Image 1 (cartoon, rainbow, N blue to C red):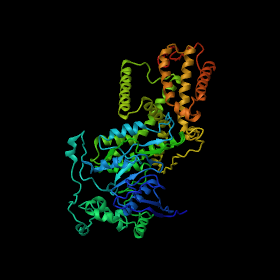
Image 2: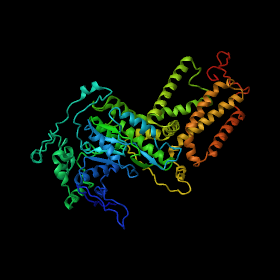
Image 3: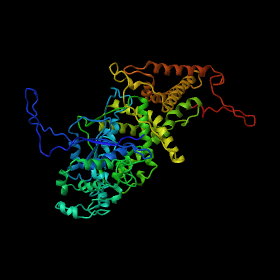
Image 4: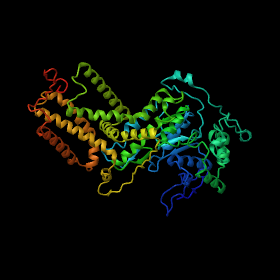
Length: 597
């Protein structure tokens, strides 16, 4: 099936002069005589999807729109929004452009706005708002080389998409000023502002432009002279101001714009590799921003109120897990690719490199978290404990770890401006995602790396299907089974069974020091408390505490304890575990290794 390629100009270029609306009249009570009623250009583009040509999904669409807009408007800035986002604050563009045109702003490649969502239940059960990341992590990165690109709500400088280098590089920034002198240098010579249009036309266009006209060979940009000619006007618009005003969306321009969006246009070009949004990765947003940062470009974080842009959150737990799976898999793909931040250029800020390493390796935490949430519980069943008898140093290390976590929590709550409840909700969903989506991402990427198998993904569904009049959040609790739920369910049952066995051993007299057992049982319930939103999502209903969840937990706990006490051979007859070892007819009781409680 071949899709039709189509482009239509719905609104042409507005006049460069102010146009006021009509005054109030009998037919129109509103007075627009002092209002500028001009509207920006609006173009509808239907991209071609031809069999045999990979359309590259979102990255391909962004590259095609970049080329088309270069011919139709060639504006110096590009705003990227997902299809489920809308502009909520009319001053958002002005706020973002201020970072691009202010003092020392010519090295800013893009301005990232935080993502805000609607349709999220008041308790934010699945941590859709993700405030710790958007208001904590991205804000902190703004103090270094800038936040990462997260795929939507981002304002770009057009020339950065074409592969231009920044006019100067300041790697150190305010935190490491000495590094600036180490790495800073002029990457290319900017033409003087006195350069006239005649001189610009007479000047040759070299492959590696001395004046920054074409930073890469001409064939990298494709076989369109009209598009290539638009690049100098985008890089240094001052000599071309008069020509820019003369852009008209006539028939010839539309035909050329359709040509640059064709499926075969990018063949044997640098689109998706050297210029534009990067291809062959699930997280093209992170890689595209990373490519700009390693060139020495900076980025900025802009958070305004009312919120600049608002989007739609995933509608239920399954879709949320699929979303996290796609993100985490893409992050690991970056780690196992040539874009690994460990090997990035020296123009990358040292702490920015650490941040990118963290972004590309965080799914590996799933491996450690699986042990963290299961081994202590299984120790109650087997009687084999990692820590035989806690020593003073053990408690010292434990105190240091807990104190560090407390300090991090306080700083995140203070810097991100979130409540303690929002912070803890993020922690709860982090455990759910780590036990499910992160673990699946690690398995998928390792399979791809070892066996060279491609990874397919399901797009996140965000369209509600329930009765919104009765309950606007009903779809958040619709159970849609996915294998990603298996691991969290196993962890829940392991911790319930482990606590039940410990309780049964205390009742049966097998373990006498029940206060020592209480610490381990508390840890098990702490794990269950973190997985409570997951259990509520697969069994509960909105607005009510799901009794069925508590009933199932209690039922499993009691049944396990009763079975342990009453089934023969699971414990010794006297309620004491004794281990008899024979050596030349001698017997002794080993009570230290198995029964420290």
